[in-house]
Image 1 (cartoon, rainbow, N blue to C red):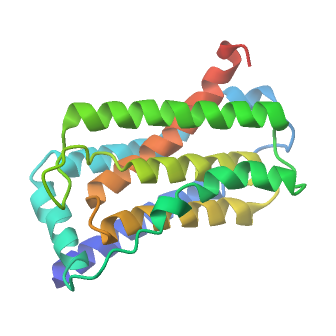
Image 2: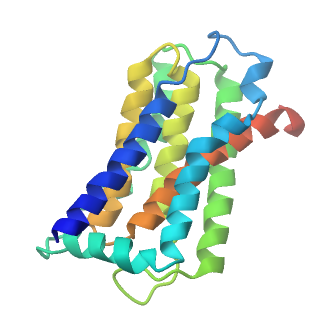
Length: 223
């Protein structure tokens, strides 16, 4: 039990460090430029680490020594489910346009912003659904084989990364809040016995990476 708690704290600290550094990344200016659509290898570091870590845990003996103990620890008291994440997974996404409507300065205009958000969400959905139905990872609660990665987490981190890119340079608190909500969604999926820790790690990476890819692809899609 204690070892499980130590494992959980270690990995949450690691993920928190990665996400905090990502959320504080600054653009060189606050206007749309060609740099908005350049996907550099540095941008792939955080999502790649998350996806690689989640994959390594899920498809190796680490699943038994990492995922399973964390699951047992979180479910030790047989608590009732508190599935508020079914709603709050959409809060970061909704906030991208809501903050624009409230007058906050985003890096893109309404049309471009909606285009980038819709494209990112579609790309993330395609990737996560493809992985879910091809890898057939069992859920922690029973005989359902679509656990990897966590779709709720993917959705939440798409919104969080959009918030960071669009508002982070002018309003750092928005980026931090977005990532806080997204991380909460992932933790609730674990707490509510819906996903393994590895599913959540990979889901966060897929969400972040999908946004980066969409910003890179946009100019080639008649953006």
